[in-house]
Image (cartoon, rainbow, N blue to C red; front, side, top):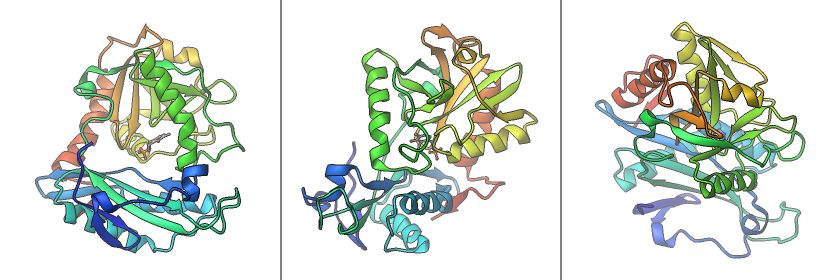
Length: 303
Ligand SMILES: Cc1ncc(COP(=O)(O)O)c(C=O)c1O
């Protein structure tokens, strides 16, 4: 990871090396944090943050689910993201706002612990490896299920939820795959460890429903929008495991992964084992918006 100069912590920009928390912070013991992953792109019109309003709203929503009251307004948090990018002089970067329960109480009851907020920014390239936006990745179906409903709230982007994602990711990497796909508690396709999934067959685009314990991603929303604009039918529905193996195209979406084609699942080849034509058309529109700054849908905040 490339260190930046400054981190915004509880209202102040401080040196990266000084951004520390106490070992007795509640978050370290119990995973009590909420966070976001946001991208800022360099465009010919200046640097632009993708879905800034939406990400900050999701941070508030995730926190509300876990009964965390963030001591800053959405406007203050957005301004702090922009101030951190400027302080670090980035043209393009990844932005990580983080809300966590700090020191003050060490029982499971979190209500006596202080609530703290930090925002870090750093420069980050392709998430699933170089060239994968074109070549695609090999993935496996994880032996771990996605969180079951009414256990951990998967609509919340919360630190503790990512223990499940870590098991999925480690298993996939140890077995030589770039990513693991999860099934939900009923055995239907849910999502990747950090991405949503789209499956294409006979020119119809399928994606799992939000109620299947997925994180409702903004890249997912953008893809559904672009696909419909391009004239494709998009269905949010149950997808069986074997539908993956006979798909014409599959791709993963996320702020970090952008739109990454899948070339094989469990060693079953998908399509021509490279980016398919519908994936390419959608990816092209998405990348055009974020790289040119031509933004017909108002998704970008220029800074
Ligand atoms: C589990 C999970 N699913 C899906 C996504 C994709 O969400 P988004 O497109 O908002 O980045 C992410 C990334 O944040 C994630 O961690």
